[in-house]
Image: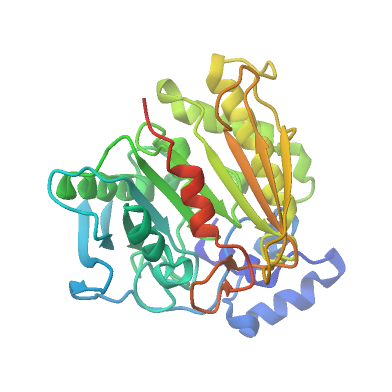
Length: 371
């Protein structure tokens, strides 16, 4: 699939009868999206792969800056796969010889990591990092590689493999950060929004030995592009999970995953989050002992309805392995929320009336570490 496939998420999942009209809207730039072929529109409308758009932007190159609460440093990483710019936020707790956890945060389409319409502003992660004491890393997609909307290319097979493409670049810069700042290599986490969420999931599959946990906000499963647009169940989440487990190889392990989703999200509809839960439960089940025997499944073991004053309510589901221990999957389902990141951040894709996902993410990730 080519880059124009990403238009789908902004157009949303529509009935087949509306496909032609909606495709015409995309072709004329409605909703700030980019032209795409009717075939790709049909594919996207049927399986809804994971890329939202809010308008293009050019990655900004910020100078090192001291914030009231911490220090931001802008760097780049280059390998045979290309170059990525990224910004590192160091909390006040940072000091040489004090290994801190790391959170890598991946932006969605039409965004940057730390420039205009940034993941940095969207998530408000720096505030949580300053309070809790962890390093945040905001990669920005290369402008040419991300054309036309600065998306990650997780819908393309070459960017779904270890030591190739974007996974190799993101893993490389993550290791560079761990080395440069003496961070704790056992407590490295990755999260993402929309396109970035899909890539975060890919990082959990391709580098389970690097990332201790994954958070997906409005994302989808590994290799979801393989689903049949005419019959999505033909290649279901169990099928894609088997592909993911094969990609993990001898590094396979149950990777803890936090899934977050708004019930009013049209570009990335809720059924994709449901698929992701089933998908990841299957991966964990296989990773436990190599067979699908129900040691981990997609039936929630604990469900809590949360209603905080002034904020949209949400349901928090937890999934535990059969033999006990910590949850391997948690699912935050926010009522009344669309294709946005919930919390006190800023930007066009923030829902300030939603729960603080950055804090929920850190509560989930804080005690997870590689063995």
